[in-house]
Length: 122
Image (tube, rainbow, N blue to C red):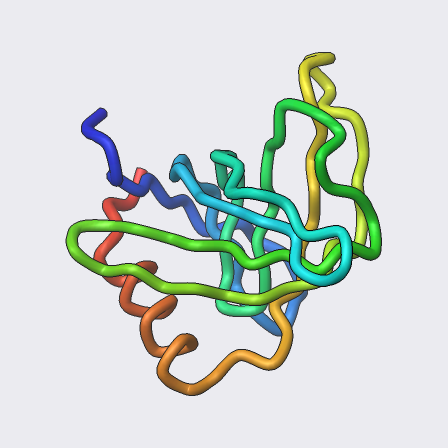
């Protein structure tokens, strides 16, 4: 798979925003007084309301405010979000973070929807 390719499969859940299983590199950084440098992570699922990330270490945790940067085929979208849960990855390597997007501008929401539209469905 070439870098920046997004594979999607809609999940059947009763949520406000439809979640899609994805494989997408994402750049993240914690904002605020404990700000971090950029960290490369991987999106596991994505919707217009949030993202599930797989991170390699304990850099981020529940309650952190993150800036997530999605890049796909010439589209770049920055989304600010709150880590609402953090749990060990079942395969034993790293953690899964569930991030709820907050305060998203209409331009960023439109950009994220374009990322989802541009994606290749699995």
